[in-house]
Structures are given as structure tokens and as C-alpha cells.
Length: 352
Image 1 (cartoon, rainbow, N blue to C red):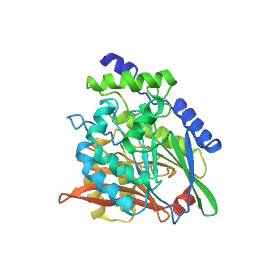
Image 2: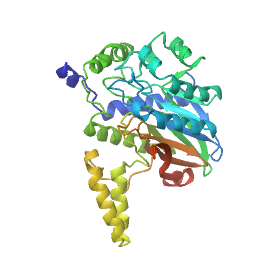
Image 3: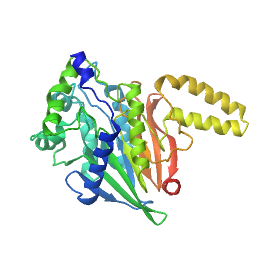
Image 4: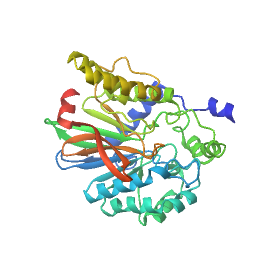
């Protein structure tokens, strides 16, 4: 089984990923409805929160979401009260390691919190590789209705569309497993991964070589996603899948390296010392730094995940003409929101 897991594991291939992303983007652009929606919004009025990779489980030792649930519930309460639309960007349910019956049983509070967005017609659910079930099982619509009390459509991606600087900006949101040799094939291969192969690996506790588990694959995957986004004009790509937040095409480590370059130019020794300490602490989380980190086009973003081992969650907000990377974490046992990065869509459009 370990041999087979390695042989048939996820191997990011640039050509496959480029073709799959382009095909999906064209389909949504020209035939919105089945695979995905086009959602226009006004820059100053639109409000969106994008969370991905909750991996809701069965409250056992393998449930990565359990410790993050308090932060997630507090975040949803905040965003619903402030009239945000919620884009759930895939791998929302962990259906490789658990049955759907288990996930439904142990996540009623979370589903009820998500239902509040549905009641406002402000919820978009996108599937990922760990919840392919929603896309390829004929009984999935009935199961979703039993969870949320109403029909919920499943999409592969969406395009948020906004006018900035007298031009149209497309924000393409999808889980990010497109082109994955393991979980983005024909109907049969998707069925096999969702119902047999993935659950078997989960049952045997074999970590597949995927971006969520492997730092080298994670770095390669993010690099390919960035390259695809950089080929397009007036486009931002937002994904999940890797569990690694990316803002303006830069990982945290790359942003720290960029900041230390600025501190050197300003002869700010204190900032340089602080940044060096942070870099040493963070370096083990990353397998590589892009050689182009000083000149990368700010076209790729990643929402991170809602199942960090310390219970923290990260997501992307779009509000008041800005896009932000935010973190929710417990401070003095109270879920607290903090803004990690922020830039206006106007600045982004100029840089693109």
C-alpha cells in the first residue's frame, strides 16, 4: 500500500495543471452556471470571506478540524453579522478518512453556522479533492439538502468580477487540485479516488504525497499556480489545497526576505534583527524560496487552511476595495481576528 501510494501519488505537472486551470476558467467565462458562477460586485460594496480546507472530521485523533472549530465558528458569526458572502473553497469535509454519516454527526454546529449564509443567499460551496464526493455521487444533492435543509449547488470554481481603474478585474477562485494526477481525471478516476483510494489511505493512516502533507510538493504546486496566474492580464487566482497561505504570490518566508531587503536599504538594524529571528523560526516550514521573489507579479493568492494544528485558521477577505489575509486565533481563550497582510484592489490592478 505504501508503494502504491507513492506510485500513484499527487505529482504536480505544469502542463497538466495549466491545461486544467485554463479549461475551467474558459468554461466558467463562456458558460457560467454548471461548473461555476460569475459574480459581479462593486469594489466598495462587495464583501467576501474565503476559507478553505476545513477537513471537518469525526472528532477522533485524526480530526484536524476539531481544535480549530471554535475559531471557525467565531469567524463565521462575525462575517455573517457583517453581511459578508462566504466562499468555501474545497476540502470542506474530510471524506477520505471519515464516512459522511460521521462528519454530519459531529459537525452540526458548524453546518448550522454555514446555513446562516445560505439563508441570506450568500454561500458558495466549491469541492476539492478530499470532498470529491459532492461532485461525483448521484446522491450528493440529497445529502446536502439533509445537512442544510435546502438545495445547495456544488461548483468547481467561481469568478468574482469587479471594475477597478476603469478596467475589469477577474478573481478566479477554485480549490487548486486541477491537473492533479491523483484526483482530477475522468469520472471513473474521480470516483475511485473519492470512494476507494482516498478512504483506504486514510484508514491505513498513509499520508499521500500531496501539497497538504509534503513541503516540497507544496512549494512546487504554489509555483505552478503562480506561473499560470502570471500569464493572464487583469486576473487574480485564489486557491487552497496546499494549506500554505500566499499573498501577492509570496509565501510568508518570501515576504520576510523581501522585508529584510527593505530594512537593509533603510539601515534599520533593529528591523533586520527581528526579521532574522523570524526567518530562522519559519525556515523549517518551507522547502524553497522562489528566485524571483523580489519581482513576482502579485497575481496568486492562497487562503491557507482552517485546520492548523494549533487551532488557528487563515482566510482571505475582500471588503471596501481591499483584499486581506486574516488569521483567527485564540488569545486569552477568546477567538480573535488579526490582519496579516492587506492591499487595495486599485494598487493590485496597477501592479498587474
